[in-house]
Image (cartoon, rainbow, N blue to C red; front, side):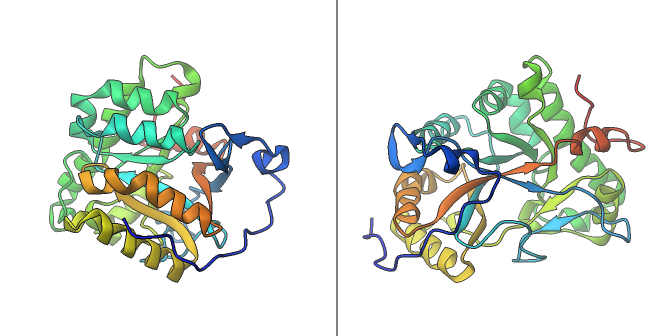
Length: 280
């Protein structure tokens, strides 16, 4: 592990809706963190041309997240060996995240999806089986992959309390970030927002924890924070996660949670051939 950067960034003024910042309550297991993660709403309203709303400056636009805010988003789970550890680390720092789950792993471990929602994390989807070249398949397969991920999460949360079921978001992330115009239109017609990211950690490259830390800090500084992609299937990422959070905290970043608008899922559930259920 490398030492935290000596470069300090000033914490940005709190937004009016940040109840945690206003209260001053601190995380009991991380004195650098507030007790409650402020939420940032990402709109799922389709673009004027009908295609999906989309976020992430690696491909699209940054979205409503402010400079020096970081929203943790975690892909490819739930991982049988590592998901519980990720949840515990996030709890240690009083951070709420957004998980983009893969349907086939949801089917194997629905209890992990339920645990994530119960702990206050947003549950989103990342296709059924994670084909990196999904845009090269037929439209029928593309639609089945997208729908399959949503169906798996819906089924996993079916027995959860209403407040946990409500954490299923109309959000989707393409495997490998490989979108296509047809799939963007398909998702837009169903009021599903698409997420890329503002920066990453390169954890998918199989690099060491030290290399993950160096790159993640450098990329965050270059983009002034934003939505970050992490992968819970990468042991070195999980090994480094707590230390990386602390480094960012010491640099003046604060953590926020990506959430949908209050009516986003209800509106998505009313579309023809919807991908998300109403509150069931």
